[in-house]
Image 1 (tube, rainbow, N blue to C red):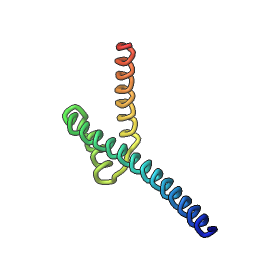
Image 2 (cartoon, rainbow, N blue to C red; image 1 turned 90 degrees about the vertical axis):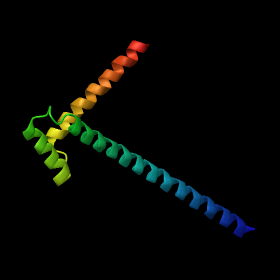
Image 3 (cartoon, rainbow, N blue to C red; image 1 turned 135 degrees about the vertical axis):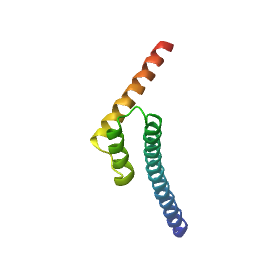
Length: 98
């Protein structure tokens, strides 16, 4: 009888730890997916605005991302402003509909 209870408790603990590990893994991969989506956005934006960005700036950005795999302050500031503009536009559209 006691063995069944011990087995039941051990099984419950194992299931609980597995659920916690799955939740952590899910959160981790959602963060990765959002990062990948951001990288895709940056890449598509660079391709779309290829002729609008000054050549020297575009080369620095491409060199930093492609060769070094790093985000410079210039890239972060550029896309922070773009994302802020998009979020502001969305907020304005939502308030118009109400």
